[in-house]
Amino acid sequence: MLKSKTFVKKTRSGGVMKVVREHYLRDDIWCGCETCTECKQDSTVLQRDACIESSLCSYPHYLVPDTNVVLHQIDVLEDPVIRNVIILQTVLQEVRHRSAPVYKRLKDIIHEQGRHFYTFTNEHH
Image (cartoon, rainbow, N blue to C red; front, side):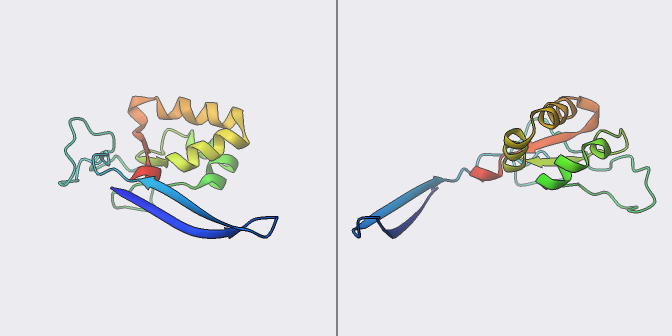
């Protein structure tokens, strides 16, 4: 699906310039969740009933951290208790631009199969 934004912008010389930005959205990107019935997925990353060892939240849940949480609380995300985390593509890109060591640590966590971290491409969905 194509989504485009068109607007008019004033240039420095006083002229008018038309700007068109096209954004392509895809409907074939799967969410990675076991409980989803709408996606056609072969293997899932996120568990339906994760082993929860915390008394703060007793029901199954997913964590979606923002850029500030990843940058400032990477030690908490590295704890083995934290599972079923969805890392958005925009958060991953922002962390890569701001801090290379934190980005490497996050990529190492994502590649651990037992942790169930999933990268979701929210820019195109």
